[in-house]
Amino acid sequence: MVPIMNSLTLPDIAAQAARQALPLEWVGMRGIALPVLLDGQRLSAKADAGVSLDDGEARGIHMSRLYLALETLEQRNISPTLLHQILEHFLDSHSGLSNNAYLKIHTDLLLKRPALISPLSGWKSYPVTISASLKNRMFHVELEIEVPYSSTCPCSAALARQLIQKQFIEDFANKQLNHAEVLAWLGSPQGIVATPHSQRSTAQLHVHLDEFVDELPLSAIINDAEAALGTAVQTAVKRADEQAFALANGQNLMFCEDAARRLNLALRRSPGVSAFKLRVTHAESLHAHDAVAESHWHREQA
Image 1 (cartoon, helix red, strand yellow):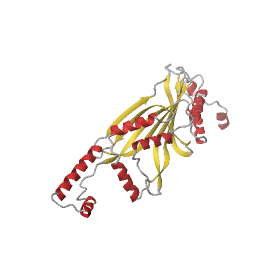
Image 2: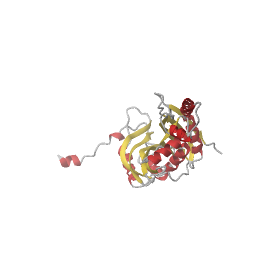
Image 3: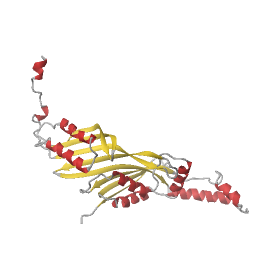
Image 4: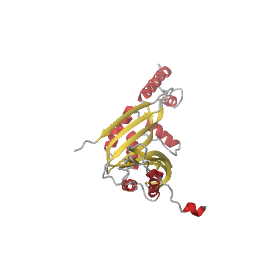
């Protein structure tokens, strides 16, 4: 029986005619596990690969052809050129069936960050999504990046300072001030009776790239965002680093509105960025809800 089975042609059900003749905007696979090369790093990733099914008479696409085309991502660094080539391969393998092709790659970019004072350093993980499309032969790339940072509430800082002033008046009213006594008071819980609240916050950046960009500016955008925000979360720290971080937070008070405006101005100056949408979320330690601000920008055509 085995030789007889091997001699038979395997059925191609996807090539059969559809019972309802109707085109589909996207058909493919989501969550394909694969390794990728990004900024010289081999990273674990998940990919979404799909094409439009413009031939409404066709029952389906050839998903295995899309899957096999992704093998290039294991061998070459991800770039706009490589993404364009993969999408072209998607369409070439679906000639007569599809006019548009899509690819999304979800991964975590690792960047090594130095401590603020000590010689220590450590790795930080930044969730990123790279989206590429080829629609009616027009190629387009977008980046989604998540950047964590620390934010300290300006309102709570002012209220904390007022309480410290009040405590100072209570403890030193009608007393001759002594330098050593005041210095000890400032370093004690009896003196610093209140502190402002700070929280880990997140900036979600959705960036549209110019057509002429040769490389994905992931690291550059992350660096620009962290520089604008001023208080990036840390990795390996010693006490000197923690103290420097406390100082940085105290000198960098911001509402979510402040963070959104800073990022807007920074991303406008980032090379290769033609448009963006951003959202900042401050996971409030005071409230049971988050504080959120959003902003967007699109470069006007000359």
